[in-house]
Length: 316
Image (tube, rainbow, N blue to C red; front, side):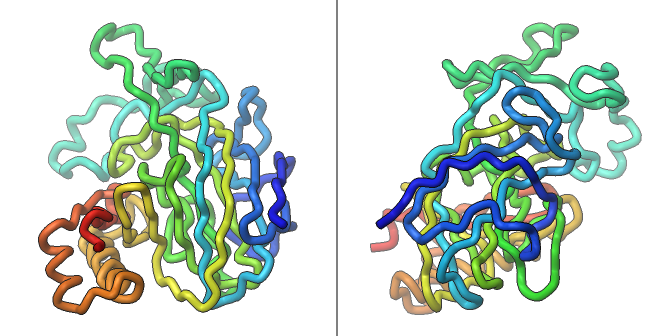
């Protein structure tokens, strides 16, 4: 019989590793209710509980998960739980042409607005009741207006193969710091299992983030998260996948700000063709043609990952 686990971590980690003490052992179909810190290590009360750099909640050990399996993580809730967040004050230079970089304004805005010793961070107000975000930038009233919040998780992943223990900075075939704004409440994230128990981690909540994460961050904030996991025995995955009510999505998952988008596109497209054939019975020519006619490519992260979406209405 499935159970509900309500658990808040007291220790957080910055690596997707198989050797960290297990936060909770869960059976497939169990529900987990938990919380995540923001990327700077602060909780919903603003308390610093960990160093900066996307501290992760987990690991969650999935009973029965073995290498060669895969898991599907259904994000039942990804909810805002505090009234502020922060971003960088300017775009990441990797998002701009080299000839323009020398003309870009100073990264120094105001010292200590968000974090002691930092002058490059812009605070944002979050209206949880109205689900609206707005920057605290009084020098230019009216320049940037309020936006509707779209909460998402930047980090979701499992321990990768072998002894590899990546930090919560990059992403890869195991998931990781994917920073894809389609990973939000109602989405299902499919991940390969490379270690017994999978060792699932979540973190890095954003109240809002544009395609590609061009600032180098979204509106970083803490989150309330609820999820359940389905185990698929013998279903081998080579890349993360996402499902929403409208789309199936393959991700060419690579380290952000340091990878070729061409390669990310190739990885996403190759995975989608395999997915359409294996799970939906498409012949090769039909899978290729479907991608060619209705495929939608997303830049997941600047100089990093690409995603390919196929509307479910075309899957028969």
